[in-house]
Amino acid sequence: MKPLLLIDIDGPLNPYAALSRRHIPDGYTRHRMRPTGWTEGPALPVLLNPAHGAELLALADRYALVWATTWEDEANEWIGPHLGLPPLPYIDWPAMHGSAPDGTLWKTQYVVEYAAGRPFAWVDDEITERDRAWIARQGPGRSLLLQIDPRIGLERADFDALAQWAADRDEN
Image (tube, rainbow, N blue to C red):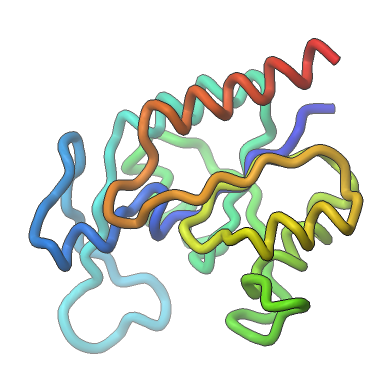
């Protein structure tokens, strides 16, 4: 069974923090979106790099791709089509932005629960050492956690690390 590749949107695919610096990274295009809950004011600005879709599809040979984002199923409507991705499964968070064990990100406990012992790689801008330590203590199997700079988004080195981790897993 393939390991999971759990993909956050805001930070890794949408380097939202670049907007505050008024700098759109190379390869990105600004989109205006109105997902559920975004009903007032101007549309939400979202930066996406269409090349990331091809990079993720290339990894789909070794991973089962899953959205791990607060966009949940709306990622398939608002984000996936801009990247050329087919509809992907998503984590349906039992609760968002609530309390979490040992100072971890609120998503962490649900990521481990979703993986259910299956190896996984997780890309998110809010991963910390506390998340890494907590996941290691849970013993859910091998995992790779990549903290992505929300000013930059996913880079070549991140895709290379994901490919290498999957290749190393295949060899074992």
